[in-house]
Image 1: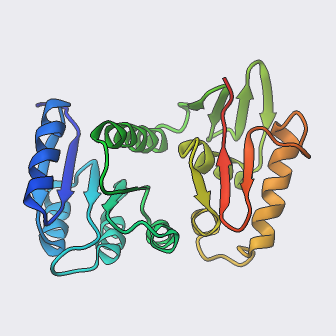
Image 2 (image 1 turned 30 degrees about the horizontal axis):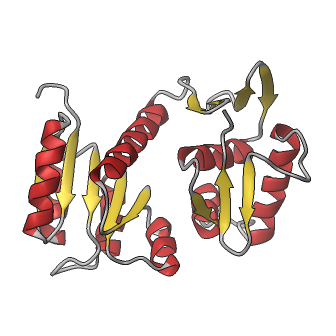
Image 3 (image 1 turned 30 degrees about the vertical axis):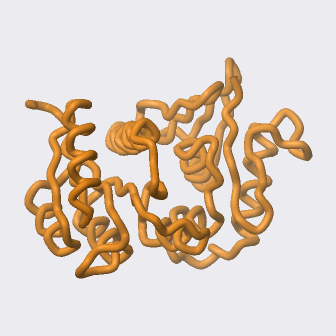
Length: 230
């Protein structure tokens, strides 16, 4: 499997590991397995996987801590795969660096699609001249420009980061706390009002009618959802 992407599955349930390994093998990935958090971290350092699928209920460590330590090792996408289905768990997962969050029971086809999105985003971070595409939108992160159909729009650094995060999770509600943590990373000015201001400015640039948005949809008290159009 020369050139295949490496995926590390950190999961203590042997049946789930077996199913995932079989499916991922068939999809052409090079699969590594760990049943504890510590074993997963050791493998992460030695293998440097392209992506980690992480259960949160591990026998030796909290999966949230494992995710945080994986992110300290390198730019490795993490998909949390867990029975924890509350919004507070999902928010905390994004806060510690998760790139996506899928609850059990799950359909492998959905997980496979999310894996492809995460790997694509990672590749685009490495080659910033390649646009991030979603529906009618093409976002050029390096030059801070979005193309919608034949219309080119210049963006600020924050607007580019905001649109990149929303486009990367197109169709899903992206929590406010995740957006703030990713864009400002603890800097001053990361309060909720700043996020709302940047959403409003972004809408003024990309929406046909900013007062009735069709692309960036508000979910009050939770976050925002990006709908890319046809």
